[in-house]
Length: 293
Ligand code: R5P
Image (cartoon, rainbow, N blue to C red; front, top):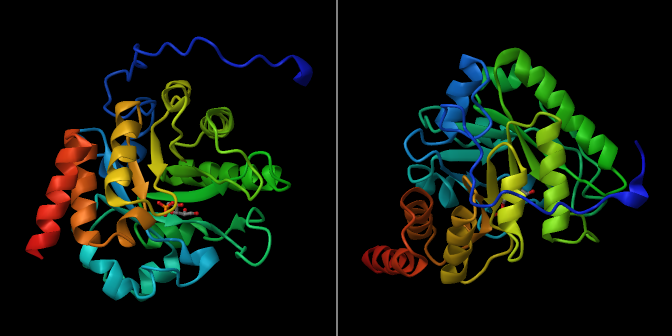
């Protein structure tokens, strides 16, 4: 079945009919074993079924970018307001005190930099080391459509296979290479491929047109990356629209740690994700917290 000249775009995504979660709060996770379900329940709040992941793994390919110059000064004050911390093992060991008990999603791919091909990654953490550090999930990029498509998908498959053995979920992060379209067709393809190979949840970017279809067609939870820094109200609006259209949370970096007041911003994002307050209300909260600081 390789009739690639006759692939028809999906048409009926059953919008308005949510996928049956089969009695477990996390979409597509009902049939996992106890350890996997427990780790996923530490990532996704069992009451709301959603998560605010604070992503600060960017240094693994772009070095000390704005807002991440000093993780101890920039990020640690935010940790108490996040549901989950997403970082590399290097930062975890060197900067995050072991007394921080937030669930960790570990960046488990690497081997690239902004100076060369971003897509050329390898698995960068041995499962034993991830277990040693008590992580809740491992994450790697999937670069569908790039020259390194096969290699990046294989990285995810390897993480899933080893993770399954020990009850550790895998987050597949849909990466966009320099020349790739950022539209619903692309993210729909990449997120679905990630879920089909067994990723326990998937990170996508939000797109204005068709994000609800991306979420509907992905049988496991989607969290959104924040992407480039936006004005705070726009970032809150994006988070609201993503949740409203089916995302199960955010895995946000720059729009939190590069905000005027990152501590206020992460709390405002949390209000949207878990309580679905309107963006204007969340922005007001952001302003109040910022002025009170
Ligand atoms: C990017 O490769 C990293 O995985 C980031 O964690 C991800 O892009 C989310 O960060 P941001 O919200 O800054 O896009």
